[in-house]
Image (cartoon, rainbow, N blue to C red; front, side):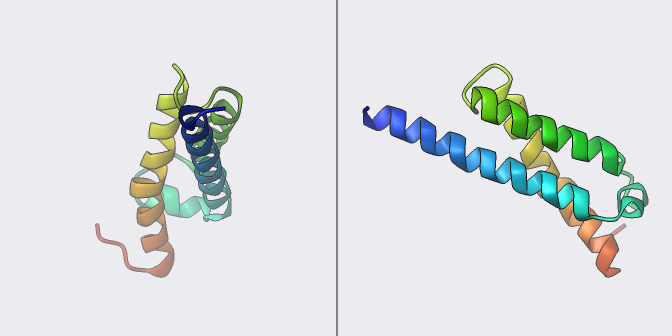
Length: 94
């Protein structure tokens, strides 16, 4: 077991944890917030983040389907989550 294996395994575990966090966050946000900011619906983002977590668990981030799973998770966390949180707090920027 070398450094390369440890690095890839660590990356897999970190991305799996981030995807699981994104899924939980997508589930706890109110559905009206997604519509208010013009994003996909709550069930759609919950399904996308859940599927991303499953792909990352089964194949890891360095696979053919792993990279799109990482991208979908990051898009949720840097684009959708802040917009929905802003509406929830009443600080909408649109």
